[in-house]
Image: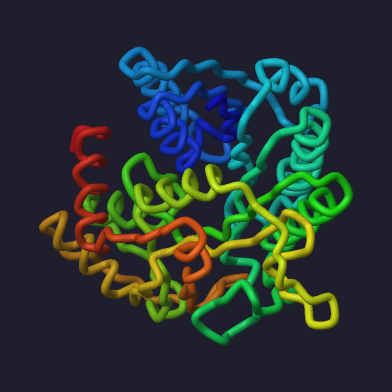
Length: 340
């Protein structure tokens, strides 16, 4: 297939693009390569993608563009037609959204509108896009299910991603554009983001510096290894969203529709206490952490736990990487990449 992958210089987008190239698809990537975190690691990912393309049956092209610019999006789609669009470009980060909400409007609202419009006019067969577990917000009924309401986000980041789901539904309803939104649960692994806990903890432990454990280390997260995430993303993209024949407008299921629309959790479905996660890092590094216990930060969600039965039923998704194994693989990559 010919697939547009936006955000392919990012953590998940890089892994998805690599997977598609390895199976022989043609991949067109699009990324602005901003400086939200060090562009160096993004450039390294892009260089590795170029190398992967030479060693695979697939073809690869890259557009360094801002997707908030309609003309730039039009230029990307001129590289089509695309059988699939996997939209992973976004302004990420829960805490940064408290500091710079305008970045989230540009990347998560304006850019997503441009992608929807381009998919509509290009008659794309299926748009798969990144949402987030953060949309569950103030909800404490776990495991989180797509059938639950998600109208109480705790950060502006989550609000923009919830808006993406609603925007996608309107395009599915009005124009018959099949859309699948994937709610990611705490993704980790090699080539991960430097602003994420695993990266920060590994760096500080090796340097003999304290690690900051908010909520006094009482967080619980559904840590999901990136290879399991990629498998789910690609399977969901391959499986075109369809109208739900059981959907009832008198008692509407918020995760499906009488339009070709769906929202799916994608996680490990096996929540881990943050202290257990830290123990796995200590084990992989062979070094103990200095722990600094801090209160819950504004916008933080204390616990996440995914019900992924809908994704399992739809595409046979089965996450199978234990946290200790996934953390060990990250630490091995970290030592090699940073030569420590």
